[in-house]
Image (tube, rainbow, N blue to C red):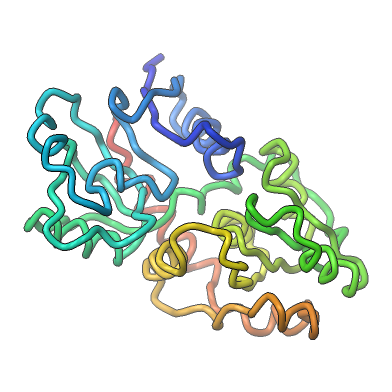
Length: 274
């Protein structure tokens, strides 16, 4: 069985980071070993392309890039737009990128074209659901991990009958199951939204409070892989004053199962370790 050295953030036990190695092991019958980004051979889920092309100049790292192993990128994206004139600090190959915005930024930084598919591999999170579930909740409320203690999200859940708070710091299998048990979802966590799309749960983004790094870029990047744009995100304060109705979320969701399946097929075809 092949062992793949995967970089993902281990600083926080966050949902997307924790789910990434589990997903790769299940999909591709391999063993995943966490590696520091300097020694990794694969970047997958996450806003981690700043480790390849940083958002600020670092000419010394760019000069030393040939001393580090080459990375394969499969579905990663940028957290921020890299600054003008930034140089790559790693050697890399690209199998897939999270979105068209990250693709455009990587092409700008390198001066090269990357004719690769786009889509977040979190759209395969449905493969981590071990058994069918029944719907239990009208609405899942999923704050970003930096916002878990904010009363606003708890107030939204309390105002909607049958709603449930979902923590992105829970075990991965628990998060997947709880999202699948919801009829609709609102989330400021990107991978809360992505998991809902993977599981066919209508959802809408809540624009976060400002505690989350990166602003809108990573969300816009994710959605740029689809042929449609989602509804505009809900403002957090407005959502507290006028709690989102599950029926309205379901009616306004524009991402379809066919769109998700198309991206999933392209990502699986692009898997680089065959």
